[in-house]
Image (cartoon, rainbow, N blue to C red):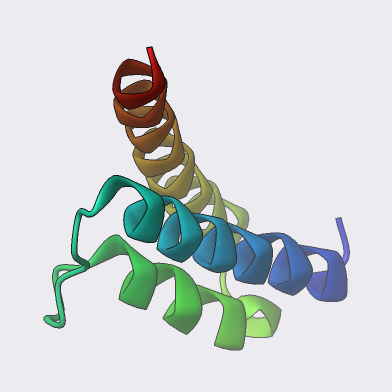
Amino acid sequence: MSPFEIKRLLNRSVAMIRDMREQTGIPGRHSAKDVVIDVQVTAARADSLCAAEIRDVLLDAADIIRTLKIVLDGKNA
């Protein structure tokens, strides 16, 4: 993937996490430990990061999205 595609994917992950958090009523943290902040920083630095760092952040984002999806599915059931 090109750095542009990586940035786009990471930024879409941020938007999805924020939207899903809003839907579930789960507030985001406004601290350095919030995965959204990590994803945003990685997106901004995608040109200079190694593949392993990008992979790790994408996996973190996917884990949060999966967890929020489970919460949303349980809420709508």
